[in-house]
Length: 150
Image 1 (tube, rainbow, N blue to C red):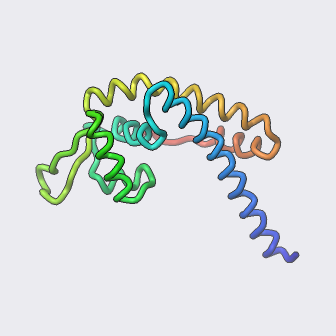
Image 2: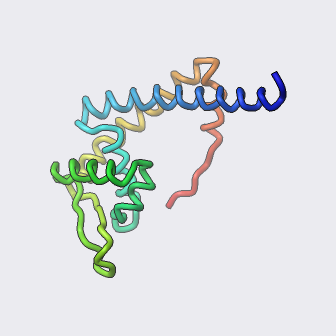
């Protein structure tokens, strides 16, 4: 195997490790949020992203980018949350082509109830992953990341 092949294999292994960690965490979150709050991870993420914005709203295309879903998947997800009274959409007052999505008071209440569950499960899943030799370096690297708050 050449050095180039070694680099490709190292990247592939890194990706598989990241995918394994993501799958473990998402599975744990999906079960807990579903059982305790009747929310999927994607639904929680939409509520969380919107609640962290000034004014608690985003344009649909911004929301799609923030939650890493296609625009059609985001639209379907927002429609489901809107049907449950957790979100609402409205036309942008300065640009009639733009549609904003915002969290309703009911959505904010549900998010407030679900956030401790999400945070606890995430902490537990990362701690469990840290015990696995193949995932421990990635968990350690995640612990060193810092993010600016919006």
